[in-house]
Each structure stands twice: as structure tokens, then as C-alpha cells.
Length: 193
Image 1 (tube, rainbow, N blue to C red):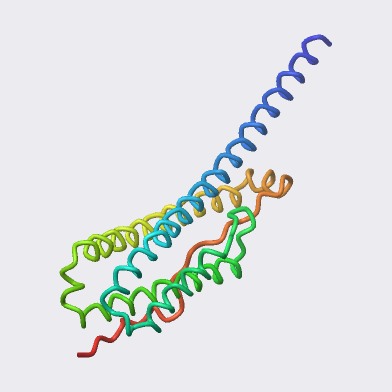
Image 2: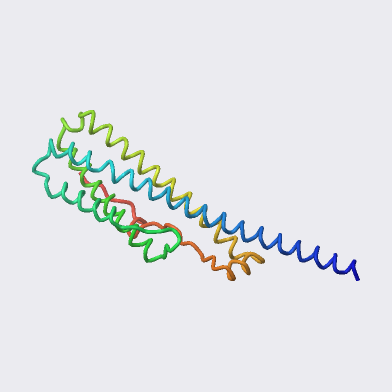
């Protein structure tokens, strides 16, 4: 009788340790997704922080390009007001977030395009440095988004695989959404001179 109780306690202990290990693994993966999302937001914030300096630099050379400059400032303002948390990231919220960030990208593109009309501005060291920092930030944003998608994929795969899927369902681990290409990016932009 004593032997069977010891065996039962040992089996229960192994099952409990296994369950705790699976739960902790899912928590770790979920936190990794949240961390990667924070990295995405950090890079978008970096870009938003660079924009006022770029706008002010261009403003000194292109005072009559007021509409373009205001468009950049407005897009930045809308994008920075949008707060999205990785734990409640729905496809709709992510699409709205991407739309706001896409508006910033579009406005920056227009701003950088008007600089072609100002040779003095293109030679300005501050402008060149800010432009280089923005290009680097766009690359960082791309890397951060890719890392987020990779973390979300690993997490989503884990919560769908048996037996972790049982724990994921019991403890409320939900699927994370992915960044996807924005609408209209499937076609290459047309450049006309």
C-alpha cells in the first residue's frame, strides 16, 4: 500500500512539474511577443522624434511648402496619439496603427521629394544627417516588425500544438496578430520625371 501511494505521489509530482513548465514556457513566449512589440513602438517613436527637426530644417529653406510641412506634422501627431498594447492587439487595431504609420511614411516621402527643388537644402549637413537617421530608422522599424512577427509566429505555433494547446485554452493564451503589408504595397511605385 505504501509503495502505491509513493508511486501515485511521484506521478502527480511529475505531471505538476510538467504542467508548470509548459505554463511558464507559454508565459515566457507571450512576454517575448510583448517585448518585440515594445521594440516596434520604440522605433516608430524614434522616427516621430526625428520628424520635428527635419521639418524645421526644411522650413528654413522651403517656407512656401507649408501644406507639405503641415501634412508631415499632422501625420506625426496622429501616429503618436495612437496607443496599442501587444496584449490586446487585434487585427483591426493593428491595421489602424499601420495606417497611421503609413500616413507618416507617405508624408515623409512628400517632404523628401520637395527637397529636390532646393539644392542648398540637399547640401545642408543637418538635413543630410537627419535624412540618414530617418533612413536608418526605417530599416530599424523593418527589423523590429520582422522580429515581432517571428516572436508572434513562435508563440502562435506553441499555443496551437498539442499538449500546449490544452493549457493555452485553459489559461487564456490567445493568438497574436502579425504585421502585414499595407494596402497598395503589392504594386511597385511609379516614378515619373
